[in-house]
Amino acid sequence: MNVTSSPTASAEVVVAVHDLTKRFGRKLVHEHIDLNIHQGEILAIVGGSGSGKTTLLREMVLLQQPTSGSVQVLGQEISRLSEAEILRVRRRIGVLFQNGALFGGLSVLENVGAPLREHTDLSNHLIDEIASMKLALVGLAPADGLLYPNQLSGGMRKRAALARAIALDPELLFLDEPTSGLDPLSADAFDELVLHLKSALDPTIVLVTHDMDTLWHVADRVVLLGEGRLLAEGSMRELARSRDPAVVRFFQGPRGRAAQASV
Amino acid sequence: MSAAKKQSPQTATLKLEGATLVCAGYWTVRNLHRLETDLKHLRWPAGPIRLELAAVARMDTGGAWMLQRLLATLEREQHEVELHGLSPKAAGLLELVRGSGLRAGEVLRPLRPGMLEALGRSSLDIAQRGLGLVAFIGEMGAAGMRQLLHPGRIRWREIVNSLAEAGHRALGIVGLLSFLLGIVIAYQGGVQLRLYGGSLFVADLVGLSMVRELAPLITAIIVAGRTGSAYTAQIGTMQVTEEIDALRSMGIAPMELLVLPKLLALIIALPLLTVYADIMGVLGGMVMSSVQLDIAFSTYIDRLLVAVSVESYLVGVGKAPVFAAIIATIGCYQGFQVVGSAESVGRRTTVSVVQSILAVIVVDAAFSIAFSRLGI
Image (cartoon, rainbow over all chains, first blue to last red; front, side, top):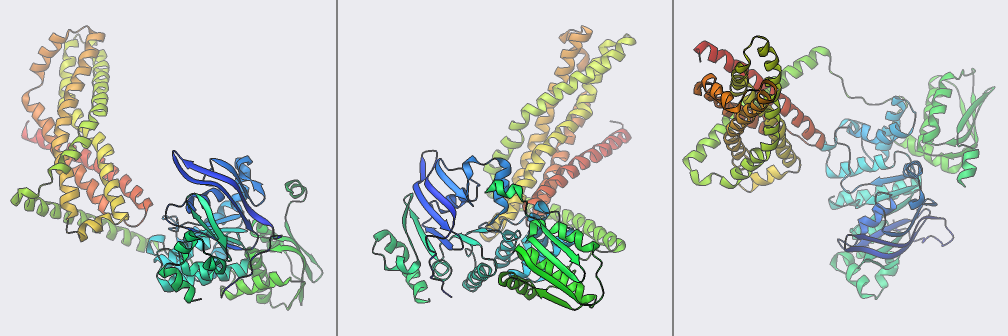
């Protein structure tokens, strides 16, 4: 399945990053980045290790403050928000962390139910039902809900974490390296799962990944980060045709070509 | 935009009009609690029910699940149901939650064992942990023997590091606490002794109680809280991050690298700390006696030398290596008991501190009884 319908410029902008600069001490992570993410698209952020992908993601999910520049999430300028407003924006965002970040002391079902328990007044029973339903959506069996995170395989852990990320039906879903550490079959299945959730729940999805297959199969649009800047952006087809040396280096390695051939 | 939202807060509503249930508003997970309570109080008329959903502005999977639940209830009560005005998107969501194959009102719950079973399980668990501890001590002994036979394999560097960590860095807190303890004993005892004109005996009081009992005990308790817990946390975290397995796979016995140096270092450090605590305690008593009872330092020390025999001193210091062995063993053993998560590290660390302090006090009591039987 390959979605090439690149969203039109008229689609509502969900995340607007403008002139963003981030420094850690002397180290410049990125500089003057501009990026708009449109309603309903699946945007992939790629780049070599240390190119600041995850930092950019963390700035968009309000976990890190940029040094300068502005980030607007769901129409709100986040540097101007109060604590309470930030909380309200966060409730509309789901994040899948790289290693799942499931709470070790809670069962899978309780993990998925945790945001519901925190942000709604539903009865425990209904919360458990909705959590079980979310588990079913990500392809886990009801019995898996009783397991604890350390009893799960890597693929199951990612699925459980995804179920938790979509617990509140977020409008905006961030996935940090969704397929890292998965075997190729599980990674393919996870890509399918992301597309399935996209068609069922229609969130805007931002993912950070290295996985060439994910880029070809899932992403509508790809932005390439490097040297602290946005090096290129476009659909994978466009990037594959690009002659920009940085783009060619990144996408035309053996893995990139293999992934392209499999489309 | 946010102002408009404040004026018309998003809510989800339902109203029963005759045999028609009118659903409206935002059927999203944040608004469901009202629906949940409202639905409980509905009295359904007999016969077919019509669900009018045209006024539902938004629905998410939570809302769809609520709808599915409602349909299941109606079906169970044998009403015929007609759905009207369901938007295509909502219909898709309903289809999605139906496809999960989950039955409304049904959640798999962990089996809670009965009381007898729980009792049996926890007894078994305690027995297993006890046996595990015995096995651990055995392993430690075996590893220690191996090292004695091959002294080249003794990890001096780890021992020295542990010694610095457990001994040298504990000097401040051990010194301060025993000094204060000496002051308190001298003050409380001095007030009483003065009534009987026996102020000078404050040196006996402070000297004997510190040297025989309190210095070894308070040092052991501080070290259990400070060092025993660190042992558990360190080994436990290494267990979680698979560092222990990495050591094993490299052919390095964790026992030799992690446990024995800690044990040995603590057995050396604790008696030394105890001696230090003796000195600081006696010093505290001396200062307090001089301030409160006007006893000169030289008089105090003369009396101390008469009151505290070498025997008493050795009894006190002699207990310290035993306490050290207990603390190191329990600390390391609990570290290896960690499974899985960060939470387990925290739990085991607590258990480690509680158990080692308890064991130290029990063993101290046993020592007291044994010494008094032996007439020491």
